[in-house]
Image (cartoon, rainbow, N blue to C red; front, side):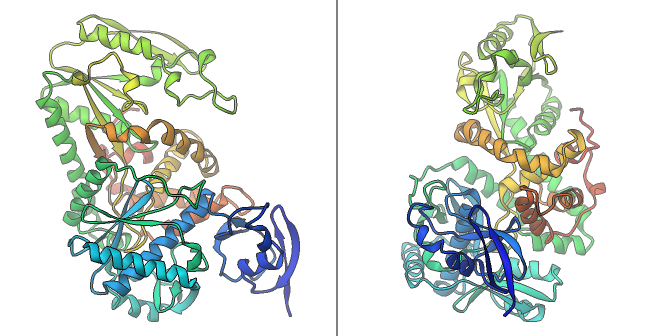
Length: 559
């Protein structure tokens, strides 16, 4: 019998038969009895094999390093979510075979699903889905990875009532296709799933709008469910975007690939940009209607959501209505670096609200509203000191202030300014473009691709550096942005349906520089697998005033 030597990270080195699965390897290593005791309270859901996320049921054929992935880790939580979506899709296929279930946006700690016939989910159907899922979990059925020829898989999805999955298949030309299989249900293997349904015991399925919300447990406490907190503004964004996708006739990567292959991508780009500009024009109209009271527009959003270009494009729309926008950079209101608060690790926390001189900012805003002239500050990032800029401004007739920064939605940023004088805009990139019917494009990945390209083009950072700092960026968003997104007066979605194809052109060579021994390799490989399904789109089609130009370069705007 041929054997291989595996190093279990942080545990020991063992010899096992070639072709053993990670689940078998962990059991042979004697880790199984420790999962529920002192070593770790939860069973592993997947494995890292030479830093690549892998299903526990997948065979391993060579010497390697291997580590368990638990549900109380970000990667483990992602595996759990994907597996639950697979379970729900399986239930829908068996309970309502003539209806097509589609995964949509993330809301709270869950994913919104709906049926494409737009009929609401009845209480009886919801109950049947829940009952079926509970039964499958109780049976602890295996979820296997199977390999089938392209022809067999193509014919299967051609007749499976999964239009977006079939569209994705049309772009693929691998001789063999990996599938996830449980009983007689099959779906494309997009990402690793748990090896058995019995591991999926904690979830909740609730009615939401015209569909259902599949809710997940807390990442750090995977056996507990947090209370549901609705965020209507996110649903409104996604519903509007969904209608736009219908106009563009592209709801998935497969549909986008087809448009590209037919040579229709240039018209598609122009339509996508026109629809986005139309939305910005409508926001400008709202501001104009409230101009008798609105004195300042506050624009906020997570990293790489396109806040800066959104502010610039909105300014153009406002100027077209006769207004004169005045931009104030919040970064110039930092306290001196010596006064910057420290985080829990003792490092300067430049993202917290207290890193800004709120009292000084509000005093200047009040002076402006009273007709006084102020001198704008400028923050010297080399010396870490705020200085006078020598630039003086005052607000005249038809002039309006625009403040853009991560804390714009937080009322504590402008406590001395009346709510009637403020209009808050939340900018995010919430794509409704799915991978296929049952696999969504992660919003964070969408922004991460933008960030990776911008960091390389304008900040001299390689892909590893961007990936390494991304968890810190997300931490800041969870603390300082997402809790306030429901306070926005207006939400703007900066996602463009075509941009993944353009970003692929830039990102693919950057990711190839991340090697298996790098810690960042896990994310790099996951993103590589994701973008491999996208047909590349030439950057030449991107208009010079597009939000996408903020990241890929050659924008008409100055930054």
